[in-house]
Length: 75
Image (cartoon, rainbow, N blue to C red; front, side, top):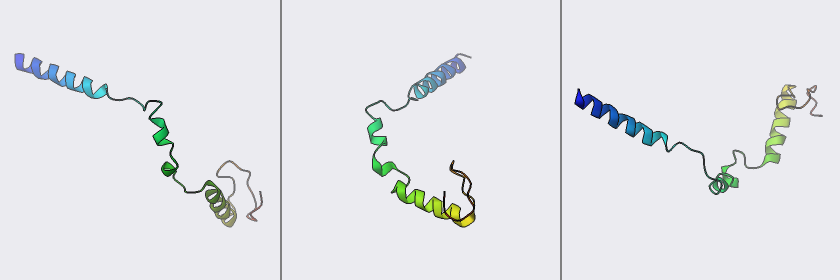
């Protein structure tokens, strides 16, 4: 019975030490997350152009918050 109490106490202490490490980055660590290398696309202008071409070809403009079009490529 005593060994069960010791194991349970040890497990709770271990769990508490793991949960204590869950936090977001500090303000001075966020600059590393904002580096250009962390962007998913290389060039936002190119991404916009490729989306415009895709939506114009499909006639499905409006997926990113713009008004629907007729497939001609105009806004």
